[in-house]
Length: 552
Image (tube, helix red, strand yellow):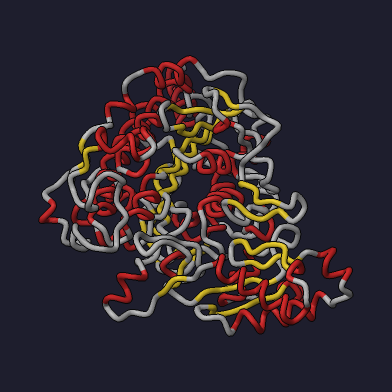
């Protein structure tokens, strides 16, 4: 009898040892309780290698030391801007399908410029300004967070946060429980939209009423000795913008003194303190929203915007950018520590990437005899009108030039009895002879062919049949439409397309690869990890090399 009882005891122990935990499934044993998507605005891949020796052990280094690093991750379309970047990451497809073709674009139906997330049908929540009248209604595809919500019958929670509205709204998708973004100016608080809620949660109101944001209105100096910042250019040079009210763009910056001439609390967005504010808010979100607390996987999307503002203002080789990434490393380690404590180490999966890269300041490149330049889109538009007036006696054939795309006035073209295809070719031939224009594509080209690679492939994947223009220009490398100080982005060249991609946490093995992958591969990879449907317009592929390695 004792022998029988002993055998039953052993059998029960054996069965209990192989039982699934509540969040596990035999087909998806690596399913995490929480997925955290971190996007660092304007982060080039080489910032990891350039600033490596300045990072601590618990931020970027921890992700690479314990996670999986895709060293050759690139965007596979143009234009490489914030809104299409965030959307492509989370939808697993390109503007050709998801419809977010830029941050803002000329809408041929509304006959005006539109902003990617503006929505007159909703109201601001948490502010009397119009800054909250936003939603994802212009995004045509689902995100991976949407698919998780649908899969869990809306039981899995989704929250998106960012300083930028588009950085919070687009990743979180159509079904998000909440999206919060920063309204600086004289308010300095996180706000939302009636698309998500009727009023801010009490904890958000409490965060906004605290002195956290204003406490950062202080001196910005380098966190380490500036003489050790050897990975960036000289602090004083002619290629940086700086702040109104300070003669030179050099450390230190008295933010409290400068704020009145630089958007009041909006000045913080252009400093590393903007990232710190978002990190504070991210930690508060984890503490108050119970993310990853039950058997239904939740999504938390975090987009750090200050790196973009700083890059635009000071340029990719500036001391300010170097300091921003050293400080971001500290903020990242704070978030990881909070995730470990609140959700539990090994219970969440995190990925970190960027919405685009950024190029060297062309005026700096010119100073060291590297080709680069500036393209004035308004001058081009006026020149094109004069060309049409001289050759067709009708400048109204042109309706707009936006994002390097020429939009025809269709009614004028029809009334003039001109062939659309012929007009495309005439304008294309004119544009290709324009200084700093490298390639030109027509609507007929892009709709009638299937370009698999090269610049043509990038343009086609960024071309949306309903929303894009009729002639598309591609500028020369290192040629931008911007001021002669600071950096920008938007091209299909490697400095804009090459972005970091690191997976970390539950279900992720340690490793790295130099095999090429595309930004649209992120969403289907997360879907595969979770065992849920891929976003409905997905064109990317799961990163099987990493997923299969986790099973070995």
